Length: 209
Image (cartoon, rainbow, N blue to C red; front, top):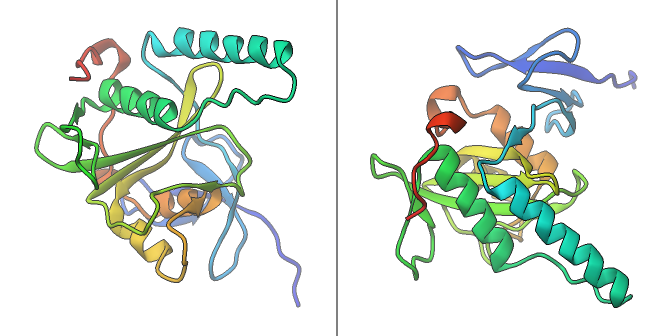
């Protein structure tokens, strides 16, 4: 069997197809294994800075967590659940101009100015193979944003696109989750036209109403 080699590929801005490229100098490039179901093993995506005041608030939260862990060894004082979800929605609101839907909406959290429904999932930085929860059960989303943020307030969009690619990736899975690698592979299939457009941070004063 021939030896596998890692390919650096670049998604074409015009066609959305994956093309073999050169050095890792592209903002939207991935290393893939050349298999029938390629797996992302390294991302070269540029991290984005969360809109103010999220970076400072996150640093304070993680500092408080470290203080509590030092004072009470054995307790994780995990930042998870609703708090992580709210941070993701706040980033989405300011970065994409989304509006929150009323509480109680089961499938989608937010809405674009032109009426598209968006589900926002947020997670903290972790290894690429770790799963990202996309719900307790498989649910089809009109549109999905998956945001992974770090302690310094920077974030990466693991996925920004229609829910149809997520449905296809999960069709043979029992669980609703996908790993970070699988989400990045799904992202490669989404053309620029089908992604939500980010606002510039200068103009991202849209309120998260």
